[in-house]
Image 1 (cartoon, each protein chain N blue to C red):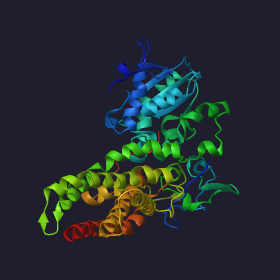
Image 2 (image 1 turned 45 degrees about the vertical axis):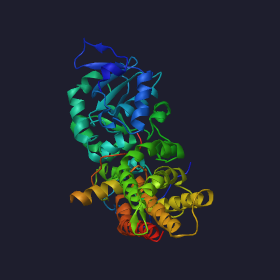
Image 3 (image 1 turned 90 degrees about the horizontal axis):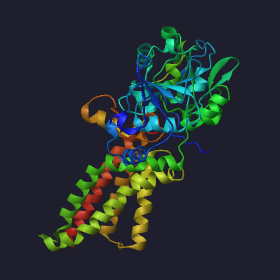
Image 4 (image 1 turned 180 degrees about the vertical axis):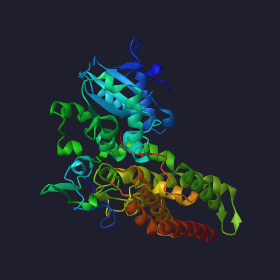
Amino acid sequence: MNIENTVSLRVDKSALPVIRHIDADWTRKDFMGSVKVRAGFGRDNYKVNSGLYAFGKPDADSDILVTANYKLTFDVVRRNLKGLNVWLLVLDTRGVNVWCAAGKGTFGTAELIKRITETNLSQMVNHRRLIVPQLGAVGVAAHKIKESTDFHVVYGPVRAEDIKPFIRANYKATETMRTMYFPIKERIKLAPAELKLNYKLLLFGIILLTGLSGIEGLKFNLAKLVHDFWGVSMLLILAYLSGTFLTPALLPWLPFRNFSAKGAFAGFFSWVVVAMLWRFKADLDALSWFLLFVSLSSYIGMNFTGASTYTSLSGVKKEMKYALPLQIVIGIAGLGLFLVSNLLS
Amino acid sequence: METLVYLSNVVTLQLDKVKCNGCALCTIVCPHRVFVMEQKKAAITNINKCMECGACAKNCASGAISVAAGVGCASAILNGMIKGTEPQCGCNCSSN
């Protein structure tokens, strides 16, 4: 997506290099775009041009804020700058947010040095202070920026909403501003994109279980397959949603610290609700669904580690070492029991 | 506000106090407030809160901090397992 089409913008032709002007207000298109990428569509190509932007009417003494060229990040930053006059130095992170890009190294020391040089930044301003978002520290080494550009990196707050208070407090951040939280609002915002992540597994499950449900005794009964299709699909979707929505929503309250156990409990909880409200009797079918709910929700819950803001690589590896085999065994046992219960029907 | 804690006694974070020059940058960049300053040297307080993001080690000019940095993401680890590589991130990363 091209920035020219999406934000109000005037290009300052008198100055070299190109400086783009930008303001705080979101258009309807910006808003719809943010909804779309949150839902998981088109997020691979939601970018703005990298380079230097003038926000408000900055001069040679104005602050320089560094950010990523993921348009959602850029939009959230500018919305929080209303009333300020600052320079925005946008790094080319290939349309990825600051934290993830810093992890990959695209929001990094080399890219920052390149943009400082390319935009002739030392000629643009009288000071040598760069405000880099704290999460960018994963990819930026402040001492190396100082060494090769003479610019002094000041790490700003974690969240864009704290930029103004941070600047007002003479570039001091409170402990709260420096801490990465994971409140329910954030967890739920990330859940829709998770829906898309594992949908193939869900489709595969629906096709497989619908096929198996055509088995009645030792015969194949097409009418039963058609009849059971909706029920089977609904149950699998519920198990899927237990992993994608219930696990993130209830994260702090689900027992144990590992996500596979949290997911398993969310799946178990959903199964109990279905058992009480809907269709299960104390039979093999119910037991097979118990195993399927627990294994599927556990697996998807485990994948939420990637969206979470506090899991370590070493921890996830440790958790997966026993969780993944267990999920596979329980899932296969569930499928097996489902088959047996149909064979016995 | 709540902060969540993941598994205990698993992270690779290490601090060599002898090398520490007392710049305190680690206490600034850590998003989980793992470091504090004690007698002009960095000290680890909450090692189980560490998520191995690597910001501290990256910004430690004196090389006193080491950590096997990476993304704690099951999908990325699975991707790596399937393709026989290191964990490969490329999907739903968190936050802005």
